[in-house]
Image (cartoon, rainbow, N blue to C red; front, top):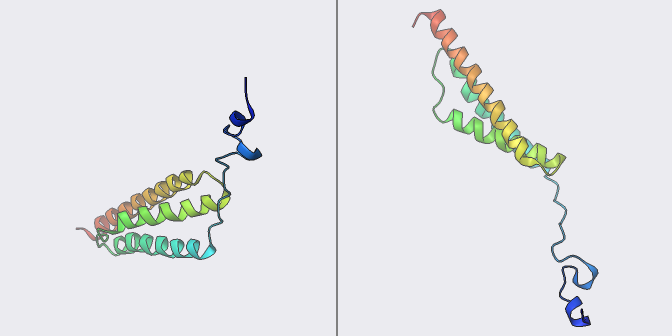
Length: 114
């Protein structure tokens, strides 16, 4: 037996759900540009030195991974709710860039004869 008092304490008191999802705010384009510039700069710090036979900056690998993950996270966040998938794609892209940089470094060093 339900009374009028019991019905006020249900999950939809007052006709609206208590934990209604709020729509996500769109990510500003300025944040995307900033993350993009930082990702490109970190890619450059990883790719350019090996082209000249020099080792990459030691902080370049973590920077490329983090900024790439943030960039792809923000891009996926603008598209939909599964932003963590974008971060995983960003980490995979950064890993590919790091592998290519390793190939560049090994090729140039072998060519020069070090």
